[in-house]
Image (cartoon, helix red, strand yellow):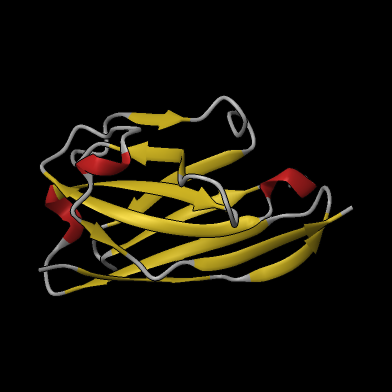
Length: 124
């Protein structure tokens, strides 16, 4: 079992930056594909970014490409989402997720482990 805990919640102005962290316990993240998703009330959880378990491949939603960067530090058992040039439409609860030996995917159903979520609010 992998337990995931997100942090980095914040309120920022449009154009600002935030870095979210996802710390894992229970298992080493080095053999897990990692994903970041977000959700606003009344809508389905949507894909933001993913990284294959090897770290060789990354994927981004078109809406965040060029602004967000997913990275991992296996020594710290932590995955990050660096968010730059934030927009009000980025406001959501952000979740990290893990998929053992995965290649990195946009599909929510592929990820077996989820964090509790952290709120990101971007003001205009």
